[in-house]
Image 1: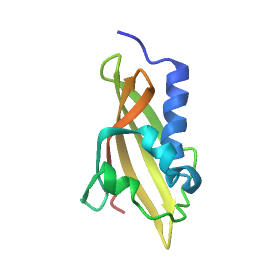
Image 2 (image 1 turned 30 degrees about the horizontal axis):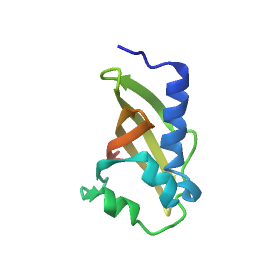
Image 3 (image 1 turned 180 degrees about the vertical axis):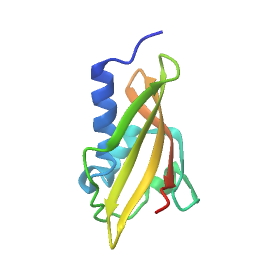
Image 4 (image 1 turned 45 degrees about the vertical axis):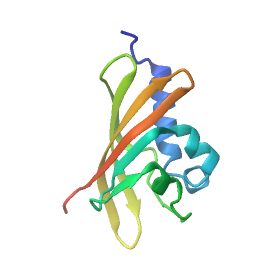
Length: 122
């Protein structure tokens, strides 16, 4: 099994963080490269989003705290990793959410297959 090295760790961090920066999150070409063809998301609201819905999200300011807190990469196989972290987004209040992402290593690089957000109770 191919191990997840420092380069993979940093690449996965950069990819995740790019989804928290408005300039790259709402760049359709960028996000289309990152999302796997069968990507889906369980949003923090409980809504399930398809790839098409995620790509069609209207641009807006996100205001995240970066770097992502408690960022970890958990290898499942040599080609699949689970990434976990805590997002902190400032809107009217500070929104804190536990996050998990399933990433697949492909011949064209890492692709995001699944993402979930679970709000942290205050």
